[in-house]
Length: 381
Image (cartoon, rainbow, N blue to C red; front, side):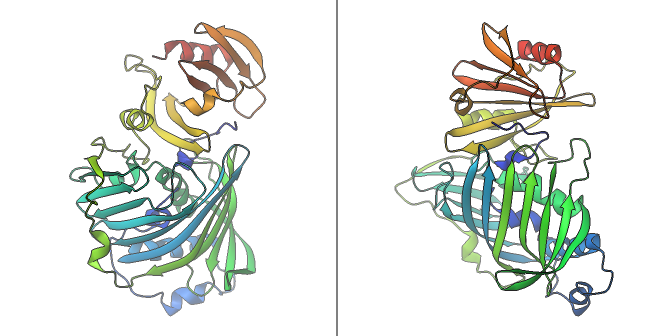
């Protein structure tokens, strides 16, 4: 399994409600102005400015409707998901998975928010998660462990538009019949600020709005987001943001713990409720270590939970899950750890300490030498 160099979502796996994350719906503006359109073809136009103009349109929109397909192509994770998404001001949103090859996110899954209450409907499981958003803020929509796939976009889309180094790659490209400007983006490499990535953003030459993003996430996969439809400021029916659970489904409370405020990732408590089993972590008495949040990776064999830690300026991740227990340990130095066999590998960019325990596969990955990794492993409870 590829090891993430940084917190690249993961969300990844965190993937749904993608463009919702770009639209704050906190203001109101009309269609793109002539001046905005003209800048796309102006001589010497700044790629950075084009990204900012695109983001400004998305942020200022009162409503959004999009049809988005997300494809993931990596050594360990592969899959495609298509979702239709609506969003309006006052925190209202609706998203439905139309097609999916990701077993944990089946077609038909529906998320509805009226601005005060959230419903997450899993028709194949005959269950609805429902709860008030009071006091939880917007992150509850995207941070609920009932829908961890959202984390990919939370951790990915925002830094692409806000923090990338951008250069104009091409003036001519075609995406689904639209003429596009291609902007090459790379991450700023700011410590703990998001995923390490490089790739291309395709902006509609006429409107400056995104048509497609193709991003290589270091140590993970290539992720492609294709927006076959993207409409801003169109009237949306209020009925889209209302939901009545079917009579034959079980309604259970939404997790009350809010997501990590600054990142949109899960809290440890949310992750354990989603997993259905105890996750090994560093005890709170180890105050030198700070848990920043938990992301969720999804594969056909199950979920992997990624706990992101800081100790001073040193960062590392603990990956664990039943899905990892089915994978062989990486090659490396063999040693005895916590009453079992472990390996310490330096084959990847990040040294990795790996072992299996209590039906889980566990890996500690980061800028750690062997003794530092072993010391952290021995503290886990």
